[in-house]
Image (cartoon, rainbow, N blue to C red):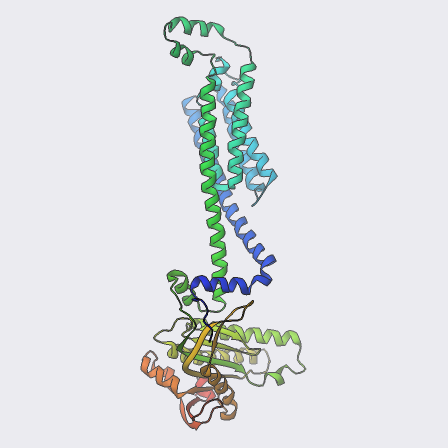
Length: 472
């Protein structure tokens, strides 16, 4: 036998990636797009709600601390920011969004206008330089912080670059304006004669260009750091999406508790190995006759219902769905990780399947549909586990135990019963001591039977239909 690498959780993930590559393009991309769109929408909603709360707080504070009709100007500008937030909520999309970039530019331009253009309703006048350097630049950091919630990392970099451009453009415009109050510069020079540094810093008409450059450099550094953080967060979101999708793929084969265990512990499942497991085969008796002449849509609907009921019981009893077999399926208990109640789980699952089938038939009878007869075979023994295939891998369970379980399911026809169980499985159930009296009650011992593939006869137990359905 050829060894293959450890089927750890990571290798199982790689296995399911390979087996789904053929169908990955449209569906996987749609899955990722939907996840990113959902994440983007949640970020936008949070960012806009935060913006509106902050604007309401600033508006209220402005009205209280600077009460006057002239404050209507600033309240109107705050309303403009609120409307931009509403537009972002309506137009924001995952990925590149020209509309979103335009609205971001509107944010930056409106804030620049608010900081540099004097209030036309105010009687107070002052040099434009003071308006420019009045420490209003710190409000750009508020926009930057809000952007990290909903923007991509590239948009954060763009915000840093555009803010630098807008603020430096404003500096050039201010430098081109005539000095309105030269007498203030003269008064400052006279008042602080002998202190040139104070004159430079306290001159009301001085732009302090070095400080303005320092502001934008610091802003660019902060924007770059935040962009890296947003990029890392986006990668984590994508990784989370991929892991959730891969776990969903694993859940198609293994029971949810096994998937959780593999994901949580990431423990090695070792190399190709042999271990004792319980194997269950379930089938529809006489399905070929049932399907003959019947509407294909009705046939597929019946199969979907049957597989749905059986699959539910497999996973509910901690089993692994190995494969669908047309009108039947194969399930294993104790794969990929053996447990202390694998045989008991298999037996309980088999009886639950028969009860589910009886309930299904009652519903079908109520609709005037024909009855479906279900047969189950169970065996416990050593099987070989491992990946098979080259391009398309399959986590396979093979060996005599699997073959015997399949043949026991076929022997239900000759015995005229819905369930045939090997003595090996029932003996293991007794050793595990996990089943109640109802689970092991009603079985009838059969004379040892020759089973194709075995050198010696096998002791068997059967359960008749009335006991299996709970009507006897």
